[in-house]
Image (cartoon, rainbow, N blue to C red):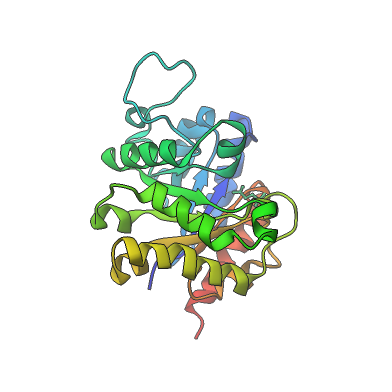
Length: 256
Ligand code: PGA
């Protein structure tokens, strides 16, 4: 079975002091949970501080973005070289980056390749907007985003990637997708596309998270779906108690 993975995307929230406090609470709350991979994605400014707090625990660390060049005159950007050794994961192509900061499938692909070259595991975000959803374009659109993100990757590289399916209309809105419906989209547009690009074995190795208004009261429904391996969580990851409930919710995978 694919190891469930619950990641907290703290977005542009938490000062360094707040991030340290939250990371400490999460570390404590999940100390006895071995079967679920937990990843915290604080802002860049808090990565080092959070790393110190979670050091020696199984809690992993992710960045929320990065540029693809190793170094250079790119004011305000952070490179894979700077994240390597600090983080295990990096979120790439979050819909907010695509929407507000001009990221495209091409830049996502460059970032994915740069991350893998530095042993950073990409969490690649895909997902349709409301108009595409209502027009029935979801499967084709998400499939095209997957193709763009994985372009030029070997099967071995592809299998390491985590994909987060996040319908844009569900992010931060309290309007989560219906679990079985999200599972069908993941099966067809993500695993189906990966089967076409590579083979069934790669498609079955890639871990796929659902994201978009995941909350303590709906996590088990998502995690009970066969093609959903975890969650990328914004709002509900900002408090240790609700985030801990989500992580425990992933244990539904191990109930027969
Ligand atoms: P949300 O955000 O859980 O607050 O909807 C999810 C995300 O943007 O990754």
